[in-house]
Image 1 (cartoon, protein in one colour):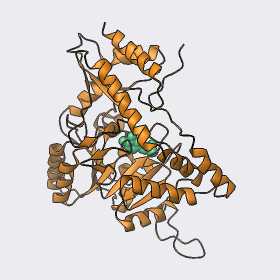
Image 2: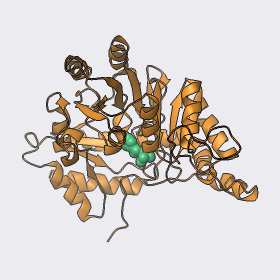
Image 3: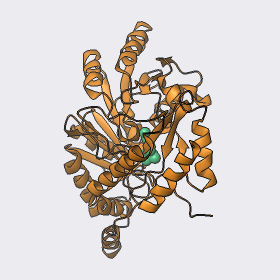
Image 4: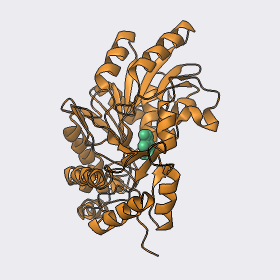
Length: 376
Ligand SMILES: *Cc1c(COP(=O)(O)O)cnc(C)c1O
């Protein structure tokens, strides 16, 4: 059996240990310290935002974003349906109501028309809409111009879930700099990792100060332990932040390698009738976190996504269906949904191919050979 080829595995630079050792040598083995400050500065200058809070996960960052926007019992948060469950779960942590919105075919992300329909209908029902969560799936920028225009017209805060999109740009600006509050993830499978971690970004200093306060148990300024608000234990450790600093030294190389993987797949597979790729619109630049293909069985003589996935699995190559939309998840079966079947179709026919920046050219050749073999 060949060694397993993973979908997206951590890719260390060799610079991480320098920061981690520094943390040990100076005894900053705590959820505060110079690596945390340094990592936050790295993120701010790279993304082009004024302020950042390093946190224990992207999910924690989304949770705090919703806390600070005042989401509470009965409030509606509009969320892209086509995403990972972590985009939507924090709405429920706060007793809010997730309302899901379909994607469009140009970016696979939040459909502006369906979003506006959802806002109008929820308002007509007398609902308080506290936020819109737009996701940049697989690194691809959502239609931010249209989405921000709608959010501004209805005076609703935009949260960018840029967990998959560090290094991507829209209209020349990095993702993670467009929303009122923006979320990154550094989980092990993301484009860079801290082994587990996340960040909240904003140009609003008060939000970021408040998020640091909430993330460290909401301790009031007193010599004893005093609390006037409910807090959380959500800070990143100074050790993990050291890994993040080493990773930020190579972020541009990681983006370039992921994009090269994508280009390789396009060259090798786009001649096959019935295979298509996630489009990149003019003015958008995706980090191509994952390379995804759509397999249309009506054009492939009946060969499906599952045929290809299982052929890859038989060779110990990990590939996965695209995210299953939230409105189709058992846990959200009672939630409202606005849109058609765009996300559902993508889920039915889409496959994420191995996309790590550490894939070797031999591995890429093996993957492509198996896929080509399905169509002979
Ligand atoms: C990974 C991911 C998250 C959650 O990040 P964690 O750091 O794993 O908590 C949220 N949203 C999307 C779209 C993600 O891919």
